[in-house]
Length: 353
Ligand code: GLY
Image 1 (cartoon, rainbow, N blue to C red):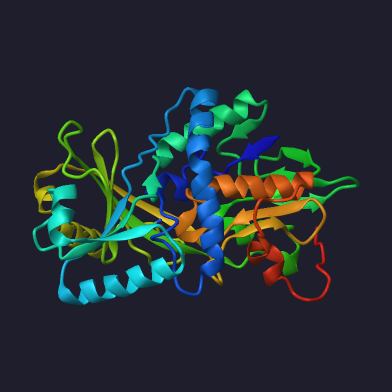
Image 2 (tube, rainbow, N blue to C red; image 1 turned 90 degrees about the vertical axis):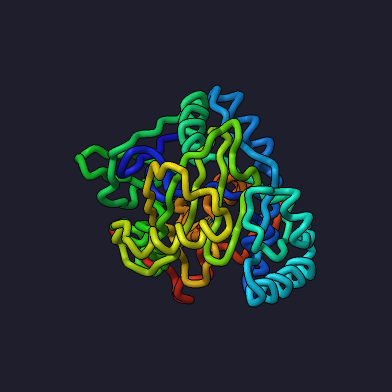
């Protein structure tokens, strides 16, 4: 098994990600199919984290304090009550906290916070630890991961496929899994009618440095248009914008301003923290905001893209679904809502070489 990545390994959307495993709080009306997939993947994560650590020696910093979604004014409070009722109707494990008990839970929160949804099962990992852990686990299992190896095109072979690399080399494969994130629609030779309709959704985020011994916050905290993800080493990830700007990855003053202002309203103590990084990344967003995972329109071709806001959360489930598609097993859930074929033309898919 060989993985080729056009840049440094795992330095696309994964490197910019917050790493929230938020199956409950990311649930959106109209995307109910996602809840089953997201909860399945969330349930796979603790064992995945253990297996990755055992295979690689790298701790992926799985943190299990849970997530709070807070309201800082009466309008936000009304919206949050509405959201709480929606999440409860979906059967998601969330609870309500009024402002007093909320500050007992997180004393660093602004006294202006009026209440919160507590999602005790929405945890986090550090994506920048997951990348080398996965790379080491793949290598330990006999696979090969190569960075700075862009794909020029794929073409059908007598048996399987040839993947042609931009540097002139090629790889022969029985199966090809296209997982090129926001660039997945641009691989030459992919059957025209089966090109995944995926586009970039820019995210800007900041990293602040807390004292790891006396951090300002321990839970992941969401506010209106903002979330704060405290890492075990004291870094505080503040994310993230969702912008339609094509492939532009430039951080902007407006993006930074909106993140800092929203973060400061929730956690005023951030004012004193060093700002250590500006992060931008491009999420791969599909036409219906659901991922595209599974067989992809011609024998031996598979997709794993379109994960939008949930790439890290959905990694274990995606791996299970891709493996089932290649090896012929039955996945643990009905994944038909995520089949790439939902976007294919009804006519037979043509293979262009
Ligand atoms: N998972 C949150 C985001 O994509 O910003």
